[in-house]
Amino acid sequence: MSTTASLTLATRTLEAFNTADWETFRALCHDDVVYTEAGTGRRIEGIEPYLEALRDWKVALPDVHGTVRRAVADGDLAVQDVVWTGTHQGPLPTPDGPIPATGV
Image 1 (tube, rainbow, N blue to C red):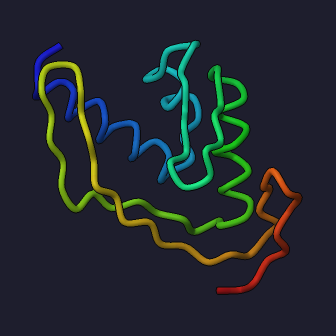
Image 2 (image 1 turned 45 degrees about the vertical axis):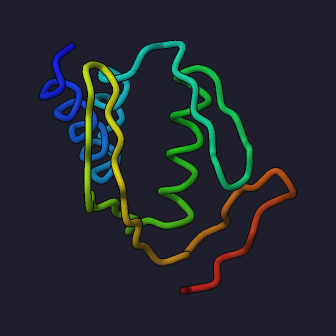
Image 3 (image 1 turned 30 degrees about the vertical axis):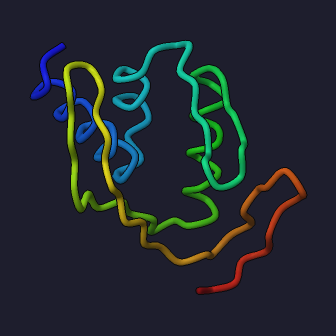
């Protein structure tokens, strides 16, 4: 994959999340996708569990939106520096149990 194609794929994936277009998001990912959270160490394997987590975030933060500040790519590897904004309006699932909405 070219560097340009990698950046385009990363951007389209973020846009699909921002608009909650789960069909497009699924089409852009492999079935065996692995998601790892650097902050918590949580690891999600497979497209269905990953989509479930994304949907949970949209319930907890219905207006959540990612904006790319910077992006770089090399071949089939793309990295985005994303700023996330949103209002915590619903329960946020965590490994230690849900965090109730804060309104912030």
